[in-house]
Amino acid sequence: MLDIIKTIVLGRPKGIRRTILSKLFSESEDTSPNASFSSPMGSSEDVESPSVATNSLEPPKDVTPPEGFEVVLHKDALEEGQIVEVIIAGTAIAVAKANGEIYAFENTCPHAGGPLSEGALDCSEEHVHVRCPYHGWDFDLKNGACLTSPDSDVGCYETHLEGNAICVKI
Ligand code: FES
Picture 1 (cartoon, rainbow, N blue to C red):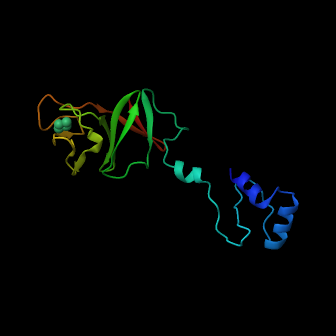
Picture 2: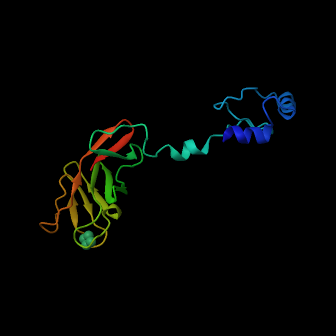
């Protein structure tokens, strides 16, 4: 893409427009894909490929997860205290980062279906809880136990960090 823009603005590598602009602005003849792109108006600001910046936190595609696991997120996609919903094989799963650890659990509250990924995390060194946004039931993310109503636990999923990938065992 950058090469196309460069060709449109500056002309073909051996073309007359490129030659004239090179002489006028002393531009390098480097036309490699990784070459920086200096504006003929004299700005030294490089043009970055937007796909690199916007896709940097996409789930890595070059990671092979352990057997039974699925790559769900880039390891830096979650900030401390954040919960996101991911869909794996048609199942909504909440993935949270708390105290530097990654937790994955069912996203659907067993009480009345509240989305736990929209709930609030409550963390200390001793516990990691999530509070359902609908009616405030609390769940222990270390084992899925419901702290508000017995026999209403949520399922938890094993997580694993492989390279830059957060993986969840389905
Ligand atoms: S739906 Fe979660 S507490 Fe009611």
